[in-house]
Length: 265
Image 1: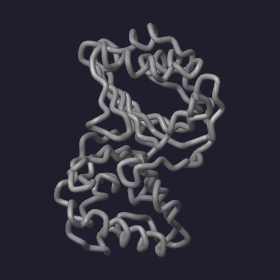
Image 2: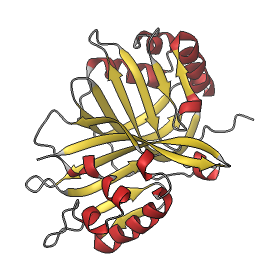
Image 3: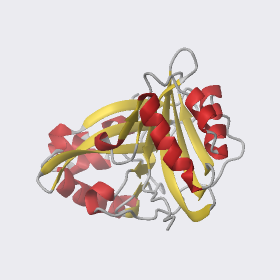
Image 4: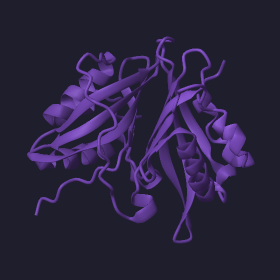
């Protein structure tokens, strides 16, 4: 049976509320939740209805243009978790933009219906400002990462430019920042520029890793940002998806958070 998150956008295309509610496990005492960057935490049937109303209003002009770009179902069948990456079209001051959105769905082990959904995207394209999003999950020190992703994370924490570039197939790789197509850094020059800026705050980026969803090609890490170089920052939730090639090098890093680097003035 397919996991329900893969059908998340379909009821908005048909405007069928019942189909949306049926994606969620609401039987008995179950009270599903949606954590959204704009709407906050929505709980139970009432929360699902509020989310549907708000999301339908937002998506109604663009629902047929939603693109699903990747789906990651954890290779461990017992976890019942899936990550879906999508692009949602928006009209910003008369210009069509595509907002990158990542969703994590945790499913009931028997019915495969959704128990919890965590949605990640920047609010910059929507409001031209960033919003501090408190952590959704706690740090999990027991997590194990694929070797290529662990190398990257080690270099990211240390602020080691040479090591982080070595973790990529730099001729083919890219980093997609949260605001999407206008903020993609590609190739050696693009990656060098991006990480030079990131490490210009006095060191690396320190993340607490909370949850990992992976298959043979992709690895999604839900995290909390806790420090950037010399700057302690308000802890903030995010997710990044890393794609690797057959040689164990990264070819993509797609970031979904609303983090604003601190002022260095």
